[in-house]
Length: 243
Image (cartoon, rainbow, N blue to C red; front, side):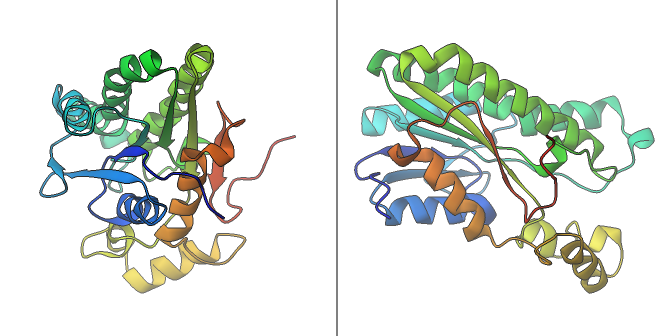
């Protein structure tokens, strides 16, 4: 399917690896102009957990390309932790990276989108936002807040031609899970943990980053023009629909 993204200017945060990189590659394959970011690479290098940096990146994109059509707030990170051991500093660091990075980038992008009467925002949340992970307590809370923020933006700016949706991936085969010291190794024997986590999905495996990217790219595109305020599960059936 042609997603009709040719000549769209897209910013994907946290896009030097994993889901973000897969998304950037797919958007480029669809003909979009894509700006990537990362702490140690990307088209614009930035630490988006720091106040002022998301705004700087958005402004750099607009200065370089004249506008920003699509914003994908993907940057985020977590470790396996226990709720009763989290410090105030732990909570604050998670807040800055996993929530405020998206809020700041969105706030910087909105004026230009409103002025043009068009714009698309996709926030990468998590299944942990819908059903909290006991091993990722701070991350779960921040990603739940991201769903609420996504809905607020959708409701407030639909009249300005701006759509905002969220994607909630489950465990995905990226370095965050597979890498040395990653989420699998933090929980025990890497291969045993990955096998158990995969078996816990109805589809019986972790997602591939390209599978999550395909959902994100669709929500970025005019093909999803009547979709806003939604939280799309891409979790292999992990979190059931409540009716």
